[in-house]
Image 1 (cartoon, rainbow, N blue to C red):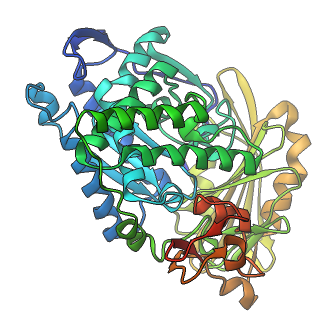
Image 2 (image 1 turned 180 degrees about the horizontal axis):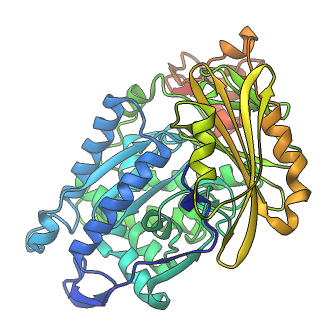
Length: 489
């Protein structure tokens, strides 16, 4: 890990001169923060950061399926219509599925669109997916990011840099530390206005309706998001964070769909069976093979290790690292695998940086494993920081705990830092090593049945009965008619 990644107070400036171009939606001239080619360049740069950060779903069939739906809807959008500017028509669009359990969809400028594994598992038809993809294409076509950047002061955004992405995607407040590069960070934290969201809802209905999908199906998805929010006791999920009230949106989407039907677009395609066929075998929620927390201990079955999570700290498990954030959000531990031949080289990569002042450095043993500890300080943006680095060698890999806070408060967190790093140990418990994720099984009911009666008495780790009801867009006490397709375990 480079020290640039623990810099605090990162000021991101993306704004260039204003650009006046014709809107793809209205055809009229309007001002944007960037030219279209600049938007494509920005999106391309951020796409690499996003995919590296979250990881792509390792399922070529599902990826091809989502891309195919995206291309179908795209053909009916303003970006591909007769009379559209050639720079829009000739811009390829990208549709990706991120391997994240978080229910989310978003788009970057220049044609980069994303849905998560979590979003797919919470949908009940191809028509729902088409409407959401249409919504994201609408953001790109209307160039909402470029419009919003124009309204910000010089297009700049003050972010605190370092390790955690933030509230909109991972549940940690956005004012804290983040790992993503400047371009992706600015775009992901960019808040669209409610007018922009309503416009994208309108375009999502229009594009999916013109493709032949029943656009009204999309309304139920917003109810699902509201139920997820209520079940977690948290704020509205990422996809709705700056959006209009979900109840209002649900009615509005249905009304707009009916208007298109009245105009001669019947919208016959729902395609639940086809959609469910693709979902079969997909992991529900967090995949414990990639790491999970139980009784304040983080376990990684595939890599056969564990370490303690301090009381009151939040753990965020990312594809390339694990981040621990103090309850007051003033201290952080970043755990990852570093590219080094041995523990000495791993410590040298930090200690030899000219901005680092070594306080002490010692060889240590952690539960029988060879390690080394570095205590050091550095000054960034006129702030003094102290950090503690512990590296451990296990199975020909070098694992690193990098912990830091302001020097003035470091002692408040020193014990917590040590608790995690010094508790690192190998795992031999077969119940941990052999744990498997919950996966979707598609079932057609052969009789009328109450939904909760279809669920096992003991649910898998991290999955509740209410989770399964929300997943199917039903309620636990609903009577399910015979012949209904359901997503079970």
